[in-house]
Image (cartoon, rainbow, N blue to C red; front, side, top):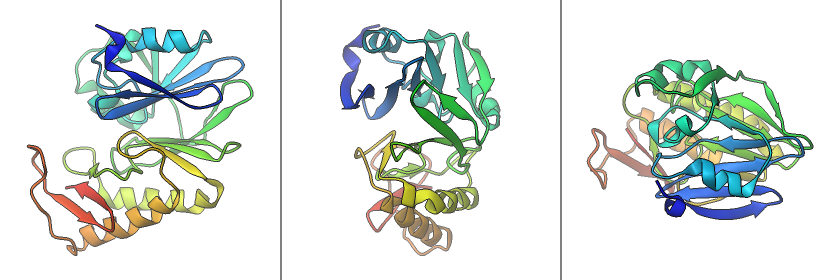
Length: 230
């Protein structure tokens, strides 16, 4: 494996996004430890890339268990995710890394920087966002994105997704930037309201589905500049 599959981009003080062929992971360093959010497709040596950026002990958290977010999990000793993701994760086969739960409301303390775990089911049953209240940013996984969001197949629920977006809407006045795992980076909190409206239209049959640009068992629904594969 090589680290040449990754592009590292500084996004703030002791903060990085690591791009890997259409998906991104995030690294944040505090005074005591660092937080790695997701591990990508698994096509490179992510652990070595991270080690060049921080020497602090690393907490690894999966926003959810889709395989493009868990690919390098086995390069680390312990992976945190919401327990509602365990069944989805187990379907991918045995893993050497220990799994451990994070719960809604947990605070991940890095030393001088904190992230609150917010459970936002819908894209998957245990999708979470990580809210840095002091710096007014939200790491949203796949749930808030300007790229079309996967909403077909097992573990996904449009009804739960809309409820989760409404929860995020309640704190959107405290958010300046949202960090999505796919698509344009960053996005603003106004995208939450766009997604609420678009999801509601799709659920009511108010958007015509078209063939997606790649082979998946779903149609693509676009409206208002956002969309879903469903």
